[in-house]
Length: 270
Ligand code: SF4
Ligand code: SF4
Ligand code: SF4
Image (cartoon, rainbow, N blue to C red):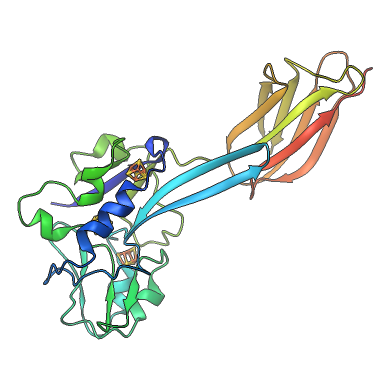
């Protein structure tokens, strides 16, 4: 019996319901022995990360719900000298509030920043997978149950095998084997707008090529003169803009560590 979370980021609309539901479930509520109350401020056991990539007007907002990954090889557990962190039979990782002495070593060890220190109670705290609910007959944690789009799923690893196939763990993995799987995490993009300064019109249907290593991608500008190379891996790219009847324009050494907007690209007639 091993439980996992699956997060399909394409379904997240950024409503923050998951984050608020977690607060509602845990702030002011004592679920001992699983958890003491989460403070009203300063902790986000469920945290919706929003990130704006690109530059105006080629901008996209990306939402990624995050929580403790309930790792198969939890760094937090290994770091805890007090032996306060344990794995349940269903795989959920719990910080025992009675044994925890609040030393913070677990928080330092967690690459995902999932652990918070509660100075008032003198303990470390994090997502419990809503183990108190599961133990009382509920099938789902609050954040999963509330999500209106089905972005968040929770259940037996075997039952979610199809969803896990093709999903990825968040980058900081380093052998911890997180049990939160992400589907459709977006790659980087290179975008731009192609226009003719002489006619002051955008150029529709311009061929644009992106090259990296042995990889060649081709797209054509849309009715607004825009092109997008989407879901690119991080790396060095060259982009060539080649509308018929115009001189080629080339961009070299584009590093997709960041999403790139090449802006308005003026073309010169042949
Ligand atoms: S509740 Fe679902 S749709 Fe809303 S922010 Fe959370 S994951 Fe995204
Ligand atoms: S994500 Fe961090 S806190 Fe959660 S189990 Fe893994 S190492 Fe521990
Ligand atoms: S599983 Fe429960 S404790 Fe964990 S983030 Fe979701 S609501 Fe919060």
